[in-house]
Length: 405
Image (cartoon, rainbow, N blue to C red; front, side, top):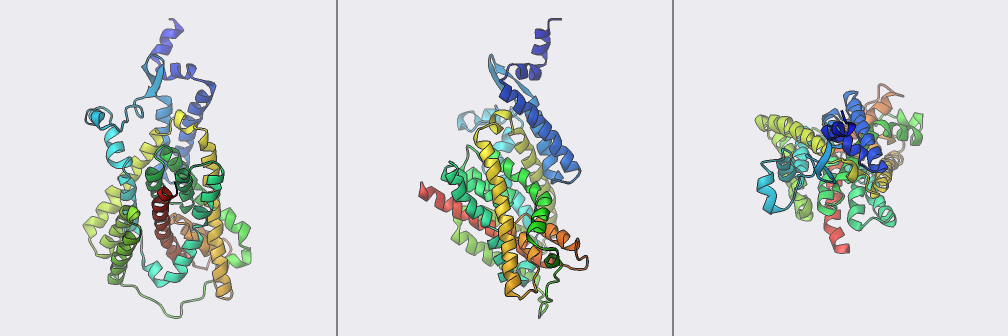
């Protein structure tokens, strides 16, 4: 049989041979990366709920390239996705991903649904028990989201793209997605992919950062017991949600969908609405996370990821997360000195708002040197405050950046 006929039969392989060396390497590399993400998700090195569908989607979109017309390559995943309203009703009936992309992804809804699910998981009593301490650490841990912006501009990125990639320092994937959809529609896919891939660094990288910056003897410090045990009632937590949500929406209307989603999740939990809690914390959170991962995976085709700006984004994403971790630890040291050595500076890194990962990283780092020391309540307070400060930074960027152009 003529080998050319076999190639026509197996178009995924034919398009490989018809591509430039860069695209060939990119497609094969992304297939391998997708397999690696699935493996790391299975081993729980990275978040399995997100990485397994994302990895499979990445494999499928880079393997399933075909000729859509003579000389024109594409996929049945990405190329049918459109934004023009004239064709939209027709394509919604053809491409199985188009409804997900149009109705949940490209408008930021999926980020809000994930945020709502996160709200159901949060216990704001940790924040209310230590409000000033928690918010101080969270603000310090925004160093990456603030300091990376001028660096990104100096590296040649536009203000919009610089603000979007700077948000990676908040270690909050839905927040990065929401910001980049608003400010950087042309780069929101690679920016969001960078954000979610680098969240794995909070698992693997931050423990080494803690060991580098915090001596062993300081890691074992037991926080001073509170002078008075503060019990926060459900009513107080619900009141906090209403007041904080209203004030933040008033100050930053552009981020109001994020604030509403977060505080609705917290509110239904504190109001004892069990059926809503089960629905939001189950089908909504897990379904949104699954489809977010799947869509991110299939949008990672070689032509998109091989954009020359991607290397810059990768480096800036690492820098932003690194600076945020350093900023959080600096905040921990400041409280250590203010409290005259009766505060564990490791708690500061929990101000990076990857809930509850950075809080668990802080506790694990402490337990390695002092198994009896518990810092998790203080760490969770900073962690939850980090979600709020990151949403505030997103609102500031989305509001101010259009005014600077």
